[in-house]
Structures are given as C-alpha cells and as structure tokens.
Length: 353
Image (cartoon, rainbow, N blue to C red; front, top):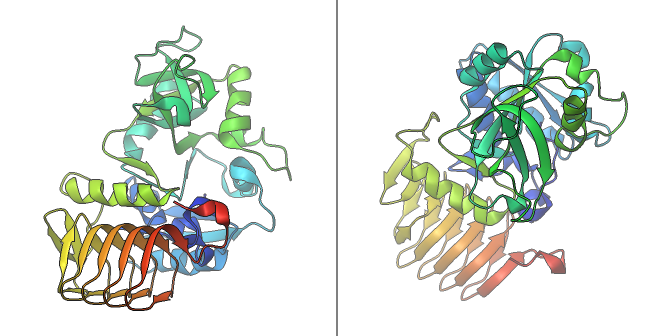
C-alpha cells in the first residue's frame, strides 16, 4: 500500500509520494519490499494514488535488479482507503497474501509471521510493535487462546480487542498495529466493492465481530512510521547504530561515528548524527548535526545546520544557519540565510515544525 500523500512531511511530499521519501539514501518503500523478497515473495503489487507515476517508475526497476520478481503498480482513480485499494486486486489474490505499508521502516520477518499464521489457523495475522506510550496509536489486545480473556502482558497471541488512541487509563496493552498483515482471500470478500474502506478501523473489527480467528506477533528490531520529519532523523540514527544486525542491504558509502556519507558525496566540514546522500557536497568549515541531506544537495562553506531535512538538489549559501528546518526539493538559499523552526516553501501557515 503506497497511496498516502504524507501531508505532515510537506514540503518533501509536494514533489514525491510519501513512500519515495529517502531514509539512509533509499526510498522508504524499499524496506518492506526487501522483507517480502527475503520471504521468497516474488509477486508484488503496489497500490498507489498520489504521484503514482513516480512509484510506477521505481517499482518497475525492481523487475531488473537481479531478483526473480514480478512487480507492478495499480493506480487508484480515487482514494479507496487501505482495504478498499486492496479489494480492487481481488482477482489476483486468490490465495493467502501479504499486505505491507509502503511508508514505514521495519525489520519484518515475514517467514516467521507466515508460519505463525498457518499454525494458528487465523484468517488474519498482524505484525505488532511495542511502544512505551500507546496513547498516540491504535492498540491491540491479545489472548493466549481464541475467544480467551485479554492478557495485557502478551506479545503474541489471538487478537481479542482493538482501541484507537486510548488514554493512559484506558490502555490495556502497549503493542500497536505495525502495518503488515497476512490475510486469507475470504476476508477481502467482506470489503464492500467500490467503497472506501480501512483495514484497521473497519475491516479488522468486522472480522473480530464475526468470531473469525485473528493472530498477532510482536516484531523485533526496528519500526518507524516516517510520517513526520523528526521520525526521518530518528530512523536514520537507529539504522546507522544497528546496521550490522538488521536485515537491510547497506548503501555504498562510509559509516563513521554515527554518520553516513555516500561514496559519491564529498564532505569538507564536520558531521554528527547526519546522512549525506549521493552527489552531495558539504563545504569547508560547515557543521551538520542531526541532518538528512537527500541527493544532489550543496552546502556552502561555514554553514551551521541542525535538526533539519533537506530535499533533493537543495543549495545552501555560504555562512547560513538552519535549525529545525525542512526544505523542499530544488530550493536555493542565499549566502548568510538564517531560518529556524520552519518549512521552505511554507505553503501552509500551520505547517511549522
């Protein structure tokens, strides 16, 4: 699923769909694609809407990357919701199938989830992630048996309850929907044809009400919903720190002291907790801390940049200072520019960060 507009990531998503935003030099959607290939899933359909032509070009490249993969895009004419968009593909989904979110970075072990799905006899199996504060998420309650009592300490079991964004007092667990599902075809038949329909808010509660078994497992490793620029920075920190233990291919370049510099980039200044993507240049005397530079960026001499994300082909003039700034593709800032806590271009006064 890759149809979201990513409004909280603007202006980065003014020129690309959310799944094409880069983390550690790779589009976000590639992380779930890699998990599927690792599980020997060789037929991948990407549902998309907003700026789908970019995704179509990228997905087509999967067919020629040395993998025995058949991948293609289904473009929605109108937004159909997560379940509604998959319902459009029902003629292709006649056996057990896997649905993954194209806008999260996660270390899914789909083989293990498929095994649990078969062993449990579930109609739906869901990947979960454990969080410290569940009040911002949809939480999942588990039982050790189908139709058994809820046990808030379980990290795998049969799903018995859902709740969206509970208060601290209401929260009966701290495991949340991680956005990857294994589904039997008869479940998809419950989705009304031609209607906008959501997996977590509509379809899965319907399955639960019917008494059909639903299973879930909490994943290890990493999980990020990169729906906000701060999550992009946090994701890159974690991926760099845990790169040796995670099941993701590493980009070409140098990892050093919490930084990554692409093999085609050049850095004359200093970095701390930052990513410098392909074809970028950082000038002499410049200091970058907790920064993501997407491809083809140019940072002049004596610049100070902190807690910021720069889109593709951004140019920062000499002597500029940026703090907590998100810059869209192709922007050029003059020498000695100073910005803090804003988005450039800022097309919505409510979008300050």
